[in-house]
Image (cartoon, helix red, strand yellow):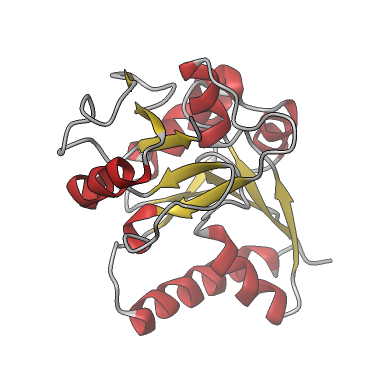
Length: 227
C-alpha cells in the first residue's frame, strides 16, 4: 500500500488557530514536509510546533521553493518535490506537508499535488483558517454582508484592475508593489484596512490607505470594502 500525501493548512500564525485535524495528522505521522531549506526556520514549522511540540522529533523534510518567475524553473522545483515525496509514499509512509493558512488558497502544495495525482498517488487536503478570514477578525470587520460578493486577488499581478466590481475585495501578495497598490486603492474610493503579520509577532493594523507604509512586510493583507 502506498502512503497518502496530505496538504495541511496550519492557519495564519497563532498556534491556537490550528485545527484538531491538523494537529492529529502531525502527531500520527512521521514524515513532515515544510517549505524552505531549513524546516525549523519556516513560519509553518514555528506555528505548528507551538501547537504540537512533538513535531520537533519528527522526520522533517525540507522543500526548497525559491521565489523565481521562470515558469520552467518553478515547474522543475515542483516536480522534484513530488518525486521526493514519492520516495516516502512508495514505502507506505504518509507525507504531511504543512502550509500557511489554507491548503487551497495560493498554496505551493497545489502544484506538487498535480504531479502526485498524475503519477497515481492519493492526495488529501486539510483546510486551515485563511489569512483573510483571520485578518478580517483582527480588524473587527465583516468580509461580506447580505448579498455582497467577495473578490480575492493577488494584487501584485492585478495592478491594472479598477476594483470596480460590486462587493468587497481582498488583496493578497501586495507587499512587493505596495506603493502602486495604494494608488490603485485610492482610485477605487473604497474603505481600506490592512493587517501586517496577522496573528504573528509584530502584528500591525492599519485603517486607511494613508496609514499603510510603502515598505510593508511580506505578510500584508488588505481588505477594501464598498463605502
